[in-house]
Amino acid sequence: VVLGGADAALFLITDGGVLQWNIDGDLVGDEVSDLPDFETPVDDGANNIYIVTITITEDSTTPGSDTQTVTITVNGEAFKEAVPERLLLVDFLRERLALTGTHVACTHEGVCGECTVHLDGDAVKSCLMLAVQADGHEVTTVEGLAKGEELTALQKAFREEHGLQCGFCTPGILMSIEGELRSGSSEDYICEEVLPGHMCRCTGYQNIRAAIHEYFSVRE
Image (cartoon, rainbow, N blue to C red):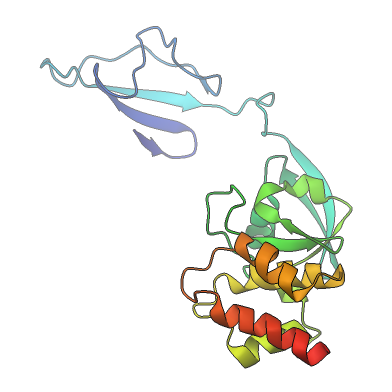
């Protein structure tokens, strides 16, 4: 299947292919209209390959095609945007606001923890939230943790203990731990219950745990 242009799609179809369209267009989804008749086969061999041009139209009744205007305060700045109703919060942050410190390492099942941000002070996974659900709320990303050039105590501990390697998972880990610290969670709880919710493929977690311990040692 080859898609081309904004309004058309070109399909190569074989009688035994994975994608099969019957001659009356019965298998065409609601999002496709005006399917023309099948043209003469490209060849008369056993494959019966056809070329069909169809027009794809956006149906305003299709779920997710509507937009909604939202106002979201991100890192202290209010943003008013018209967004598709099914736009994920993580995509809003990364693509609309260019806050690319929020990462994604899974296929939006919430299992990697890399997309963690704060919503009204609580740690949430932004790949499991729609942007419209954040309307009227305050979102903090890793870019909003430090106050200017002044790092938080946790960020300083990660720097001192080099609690990272490639750094891809670091923003999500910082956001989760910072949220737990506001809730008064203990070092043991963070290491045993919170940290396993983050996928890190390169550190073995040893230096991350050392950074968490450093934070609690300095605080005491």
